[in-house]
Image (tube, rainbow, N blue to C red; front, top):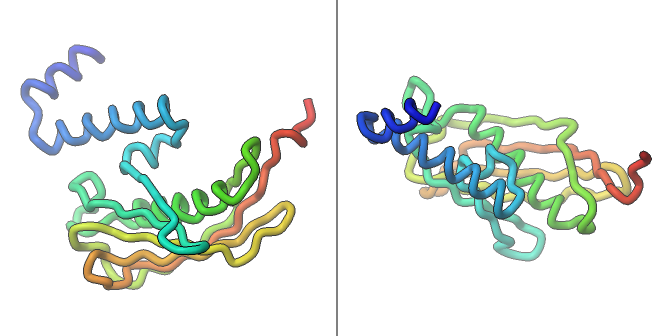
Length: 161
């Protein structure tokens, strides 16, 4: 494996080198922040932009594109899931987390532009389930997708041995 990595570093295209850079970024984010690999690979870093609204801004890279040159639907879904999940996880106690149990994505137009902007807000947070909604636009404000998600709330202190 080390030899193949060195070969790509020496002889690879700019796109191949970018993929390696993103993989290293994902490993670093996992090690330093405990992020999931997909979030690290995409370079997700979010923030609350107003009360109850969590946002990610994601530059569109060649890695994200399908054969037609648009953002792959799976990347769009991952972005929506990550935005809603991050919102919910930031609303939970320290020794707990949320996992997706259902998600519905409506793709409204092809993902294109320079970046995707996803925002999520809580619809309801109960004791065992939370529901959130998300909308994704590009930098020009064109709506790319909407999503809703239901998340199971896991409390580690309640975990039975």
